Length: 189
Image (tube, rainbow, N blue to C red; front, top):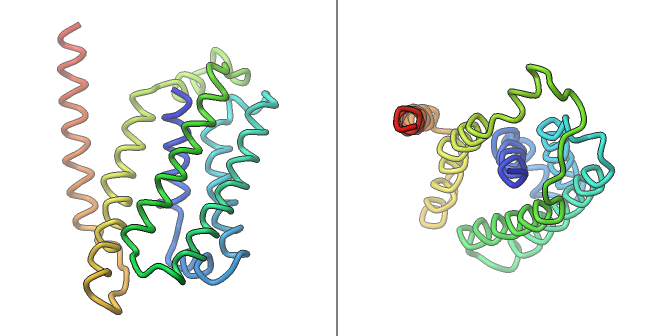
């Protein structure tokens, strides 16, 4: 389940905590990319708090930081040469996901060593909560950004503004479906 945690951290850092200002900064130069990547790194540190006593986790998070800088900088370079934002968005996310998969495979079944036996740890090890949070970020922020990117390919000078009404409706629908699914799963046991 480390992949699910990596995915949650990625979605939070790459979408939830990426403001319009950070997006503009990372589109301009490497320092903006580094700032954005550091936010993704910090998000990953928070998600992996109980595992931070393991050197392999710190090494993996450092590799995640460096790889995020490289992937996003590559996207910036390609953005100047390729006039296809939907392709670049998908390409960027596939590269990030491939890195997350490799990292999760490398970490294997590393067990947490901090906060063992505490209520805090019970929350951190709740896979359903991790899935719910990742799903909520995906249906709200990721879909919102993806919709904008695909629309902007057809309409020039389209400015990105988060559509909170649609984000809320998608989140409520996802949460309801999630709770119904979990409810049926619990009832069937």
